[in-house]
Amino acid sequence: MLWSLMKIVAFVAAVTALTYGGTQLMEVDGGMTVDVAGQEFTLSPLEMVFGFGALVLLVWLGLKLLALLVASFKFLNGDETAISRYFDRNRERKGYEALSEGMMALASGEGHLAMAKAARAEKYLQQPQLTNLLTAQAAEMTGDREKAEETYKRLLSDPKTRFVGVRGILKQKLSEGKTDLAMELAKKAFALKPKHEETQDVLLRLQAEKADWTGARKTLGAKLKSGSLPRDVHKRRDAVLALSEARDVLDDGKTIEAREAAIQANRLSPDLIPAAIMAAQGYIAQGNARYATRVLTKAWTAQPHPDLAGAFAEIAPDETAAERVKRFAALTKSTPDHPETRMLTAELYIAAEDFPAARRALGDLADKAPTARILTLMAAIERGEGADDSVVRGWLTKALTAPRGPQWICDNCQHIHASWGPTCNNCGAFDTLSWRAPPENDVAMPMGTEMLPLIVGKGQTTAVIPAEIVDLDAAASPEDVTAQEEPK
Image 1 (tube, rainbow, N blue to C red):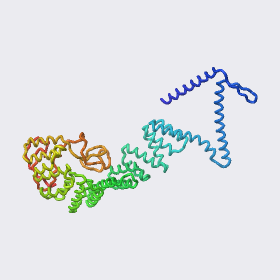
Image 2 (cartoon, rainbow, N blue to C red):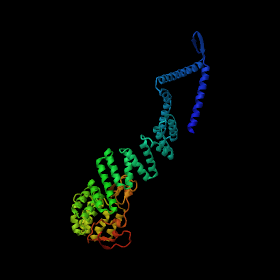
Image 3 (tube, rainbow, N blue to C red):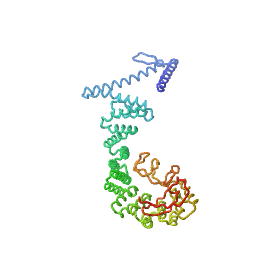
Image 4 (cartoon, helix red, strand yellow):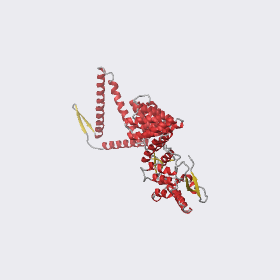
C-alpha cells in the first residue's frame, strides 16, 4: 500500500512539474525560425521542446526499424531464428532486469516484492532454473512454506537444479523436526554432491542422532577425502564413532565384537577415556592384565580421570589395600602433580588407613583448589586421625558449597552431562564433550553419597569414614562408622 501511495505522489508531482514548465515556456519571448526548402517556420520555445522530443522519438523508432530490417534480411538469407531473437532480446532484457530487482529485494528482506519480481522474470525469461530458486527463497521469507516446497519440488525435475531442490526441502524438514525424512533427503543430497561440506555435516549429525554409526563413519571418511576435515580431527572422531559402535554391539550381547571395536577405538585415539576403559575391560576379560595396564596408563598420562582409576582397580580386584597402593604407582607416576592423581593417591591411603600419607598426598589442594571431593577427603582424613566432630563437620560444611570439579561439559552449549556420550543431549552437537570444570554459575551442588571419596577397592579393605560422609541428608549425630567395602 505504501508503494502504491508513493507511485501516485510521484505521478502527481511529475504532472505538476510538466504543467509548470510548460506555462513558463509559453511566457518566454522569442523563438526559433527554421528554413526548409525556401519555406520558413517560426517555433515558440514550447514548440521547440515538443519538436526536440519528437525528433528523439523518431530517431529511436528509426533505429528499431533498422534493426528489424536487418533481422528480416538475415531471415530471408536462411537464419530462421533471426526475427524471433529480435523480439526475444527485449523480453530477456526485461526478464533479467526483473530478476536483478528480485534478488536485490530478497537481500533487502522484502519478500513480497521479491515474489512479484520473480513472477515477472519467469514470465519474460522462461528459465525456471533461475526464477524458481528466487521464488522459493522469497516464499520462505514471507512464511509461505507450501509455496516454497512446491517450488523446490519443481527444481527436482532438472538435473542441473536437483541438488538445490533436495537441499531446500531438507532444510524445511529439519526446521519442522522431521528428522527421519530429513535423513533420507540428506543421503540423496550427499549422493548428488559428496564433497558438499554443509551436506556432509548435516548427514553426519543426523546419523549420530539416529545411532547409525556405520553410516556416520562412511560420511566421516568422505569428509576426510574431500579435504573438509583435518586428518587428526578425523582420527579422533572416527574413534568416537567406533566406540559408539562398540557400545551398540555390547548392548546386543556380542561381547567379542564389542571388545574388538573398543580396542580399535582406543588405537585410533588413545586419549579417549571411554574407549580406553572399554578396551581395558576387553583385555581384562581376555586375562591380559599387561595390555590393560598399558592402555589405562597411556590414557591417564593424556588425561587423568576417576573412571580410568576405577578400571585400573578391576585389573586386580582381590588385592589388599597396601598392594593396591603399590600397584597404582605405575598409573600415577607420569602425572604426580595433577590434582586427580593427588586425590586418587589420598583415597588409596585412606583405604589403607594411612591417614598422614593421605594428607601429604592432598598437600595444599584444599586451600588452593578446593572442590567437594577434596574437602570430603579432608573430612575422612580428620575423622581417621581422631579429630573432633566439629572439625569434621567444618570440612563437610565447606564441601556442601564447594565447586563440583571437572565434569563432562559440551563445548558448544556448556551443558553438563552425568556421563560421556558421542553427542550432546542438549544441542545434539557431535564430539563436543570434554572433561573440565564448568563455569562457576553452572556448578551443581553435590549431595548425599555423591560426596563419597572414590576409594577404589574391591577387596576386604576397611576404612574409617564418618557417618556424615555416608549420608549427608541424615540428621544423625556424627559417630565413627567402620565402612567395609563390598565387591562391586
